Amino acid sequence: MADPLYFPIIKTMRGLFVALGLRIDVVGTEHLPRKGGAVLAINHTSYLDFIFAGIPADDAGHRYVRFMAKDAVFKHSVGGPLMRGMKHIPVDRSAGAGAFDAAVDALRRGELVGVFPEATMSRSFDIKDFKTGAVRMAAAAQVPLIPEIVFGGQRMMSYEHKDFSRGTAVSVTVGQPMHPTPADDPEAVTAELRTRMIGMLDETIDRYPDRPRGATDGWWLPARFGGTAPTLDEAAAIEAEVKARKAARREGGAH
Image (cartoon, rainbow, N blue to C red; front, side, top):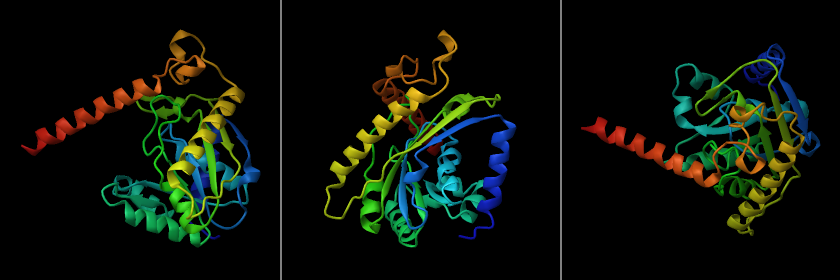
């Protein structure tokens, strides 16, 4: 599919991967369809997940992923035109039906649509609770739902962390497709999707080539793997504190 903006951006990013000496490992590309629509359900640990999650699709016949992203990104003076030019899908969290319909339309046209079921980045680098949107989209459009795990990008750019040192390892795993239908319970299918992705994350971390280089370097590894990242419960408490501070600032600014 011709895409005059997306194509050069992908080539540029691949060149940057080489320049940074990234060690990118992709498993499961064969699970991606070479044509036709599909929902990619992706875990979310890094600001760079959009970039790395698209690699398997590029490898599987130079396909493009239309990612769903919060509408604030589309209002940025530089990022906005790029996001629109690459046909990504803006999400207004106060009016999600429009984004849902746009995603289903794209899927029916044969596009790959990337969704982060956790909605926000995981501070624990483990799998948070999921929203049902990815399952409902796949069922409505009658396309496969394909789980995908990205691990390692958090070491480069995540909450309170930025490090573009050469040689970072990034591992990507694409899982076997699921096939939800309108008759299925979206909550039950979403629970199954999350269970599968927890297992895929475990497998991805098992094959990940690096381990913390000492007591102060375990921040990027989930706690249940021996890392010093917060647990899911601890991360939820941190997230609640962050939201409360933001709400207080907004309230203060309103006066």
